[in-house]
Image (cartoon, rainbow, N blue to C red; front, side):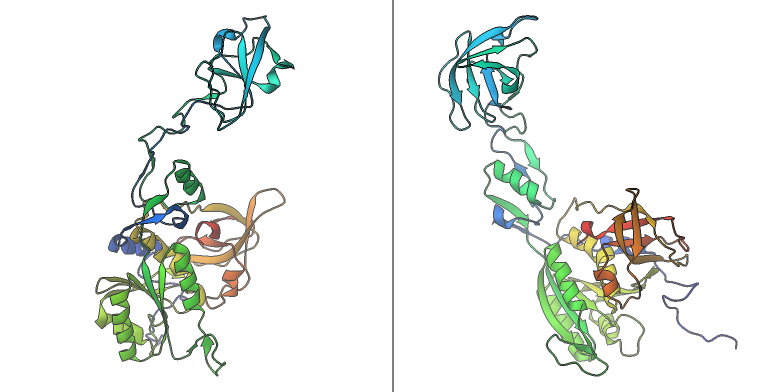
Amino acid sequence: MSMLDTQSSCDDEKEFGTLSVDDARQKMLSAVTEKAVCEQVHLTDAIDRTLAKPIISPINVPSHRNSAVDGYAIAHIDLPKKGDIKTLNVVARVVAGHPYQGSLKKGECIQIMTGAQMPSSADTVIMQEHVEVHGDIIHIDARHQAGQNVRQAGEDIKKGAVVLEAGIKLTPPQIGLIASLGIADVHVKTPLVAAVFSTGDEVLNLGEAPAEACIYDSNRYSLMAALKKVGCNVLDMGIIPDEPEQLKTAFEMASQNADVIFTSGGVSVGAADYTKQVLAKAGSINFWKVAMKPGRPVAFGHINKTTFFGLPGNPVAVMVTFYQFALPCLQKMLGLNHPLVNPIIKAKSTHSIRKIAGRTEFQRGFLSKGEDGAWEVSTTGQQGSGILRSMSEANAFILLEHHQSTVHEGESVLVQPFSGLF
């Protein structure tokens, strides 16, 4: 026998997995449904929440005709004809919030500030820079048009119009828009409850003394931070040792109290990976080998009615699989119909990157502008899946596609900035 009968791994050059990244993501998305329900909150508590009901304007915006500039409000019949100069008397000065109650006579105008309500007898505003002023008299020429520099009531938003559709994530500009309509309370989706725990006898809690052959738990904290950023309420279940009964109890408890469960580690082929064994009995779980690096072993499914994500144990693999698989699923579960745009751009690689065709790789990179103003990207040093520093120093994923082989210096690569994810 010239070759041992071994199992495949992410370092193999021929067999990398049974599912492509796109297929794995699509299978997960097809298996999850919206779980969030509707609640009413004050506008100040609505940031980053999913809008549950559309925003319908109760008013016209603007609510009244107003001046778009600082200048002089006149009736268009007082506009001079071509080649003429008109002289008008200034009879009042109007600022926003203090409308003019009188009526303009022929040959009269009022000085008006931006946003101030237009008198009913005026329909045109001359910018202050386009007049000659002599005390209470102004002179205007024939360059102007009837109706200029006036914002009509309902010009931006008409009463009864749908301003924001349900299913969007509320961002600061949208919060401001809702406030401009006088709306104090909005209907949003409730946060998901996400249970998070790490597994393994070698994993230490923060605050514990260092121990031989042990490591501090970083995965749980990375996941909890990522989940809170998405808008989940986190149920921290700590570290579960490699003991099947304790794992079973933890899964059952989590499934009774959470909408989604996240674990890291224990879904590979190790002799002590009891998580996989317990999950096979506890719920409907698929254990996938995905053609990707890092993050090849992934478990996904349901325990009772709770969605389960079993992510790899290596810290970088946890982050990669969370953002590539879990994040889109969580957005769907939150009822987010229009996720914020996560752009993928092209950038020039500043050095060669070794790559074997047949799997998708997520290198950690630093994206910046070169001297020529074009985007360029470099890796953040060693790219091992256990080197969390490679992730913390990065600001983007370098996406090396399934079919792609080694990238040479100066070639273009796809880059996914963290700013659209984190």
